Length: 602
Image 1 (cartoon, rainbow, N blue to C red):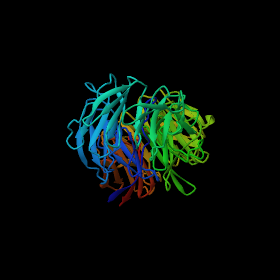
Image 2 (image 1 turned 45 degrees about the vertical axis):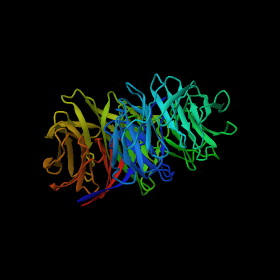
Image 3 (image 1 turned 180 degrees about the vertical axis):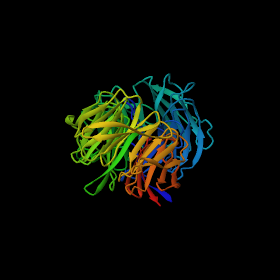
Image 4 (image 1 turned 90 degrees about the horizontal axis):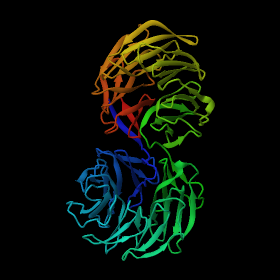
């Protein structure tokens, strides 16, 4: 038995309102990179479905930048660590690790010979450092600021110059190396950038962009007169020939500027919603990219400024639930995240999409597709939703309000659904509540309806699985129950209804044989920590389980010793969802906000 990682569907950048997002570009113009959680994500610019994820930082990564040579990437995290690692090998071997100061690193810049690195951020004693990449020894000091430094850049031609922008509403200009403070630039400059030639610009929260001489630091002009944007400017990026630049703003626009005339050639209107604020941008060869507060990455179209060439969608927050469904001969992966967002990933093209309209407003805890092609989801916003996967739009009429928070939902043929809520079990038929079990003497944690619709199994925090018989529109307690090894975390019937698998907090998966009065078929041991999710293979011979130990096991029902172990399926993150596309294809999701597709061989 063996496995192979076939596809990584990467997360989007992790965004924060009012905070600029740094995008890095590789010098050859083929890739771009950004951070999300503890991951650095490298994506192919022509085909963003091709992605690579670097997961060696133990803390949240905030910024990553390619060395001008293209061979290394420097990435910095919230603890103040900088890791310099290889980009040419799949293993991304670590070259050096430094701690220039204690506190969040907010920006990184390299000199054009790839020998020196400047980094800035939220230090305790100092807010920045410049050092040699191979020894870590200092080549100057970044002084002149009284508050956190947000942005840094270095002139890419000699004589070198360094600029920094801070929360103290000033910029600073340095000559070197070794870099020495020369003077302050008294304009709001949260973001600064050197052109590939001999100029630099500053951009601020006041919506202004100023142009300067890169060698002397003298101000040349303001772009667009008094104000470049109606909102704060979060990022600027120069064209390869330095004759133009783009700016991203909280006013929900990106502007393309002609530097020679200091006028805007094009205004890209990105939308009217608060999530359409633009917090980052990158000019890579012919590609103009911007990042929205939603995390969506937009490829801007100069000939049609009101509509991007393409928008990369996906998840920017941790994924909590997952299911798959075939529709019109194509497989779709549905995943729900911490912020209520549901993503639709079509296999084949690797394209992400979403439902239109207003959906869940909080964490999506569980999902399944019923026989009417509806995605049934439950969320911490106290609702269960039924959303047509063909229409792809949320509607208020397909929402069922629960009395208390639902944590688990399962479906069966004939429009049946079972929602397990805090202290309550709710039976639904055709999108309506028909029966509620409450004032229970146990806390229900998970549920499953038998595919034949005859039994509703409910697993409790007491380690018992109670078997209710479905009679018309009611659930009848006939006193039947079976024992799991510990508090139940997830459960599911096999597709043919022959088995019920139950996972628990005591690291065990127990499989019961339905026809044999729910006798124990096998106990499956292997996980080192709480098992949180499971999924049955379409052939009913295998099932997968995922746990807090970051492991995925694929088990053989008839032989508990015959198993396939995928360690570190999502490095440093526990597995949150599992689903099968076919007998040999498994999908996993995790709190790293990425989706992975695995090929299994038995």
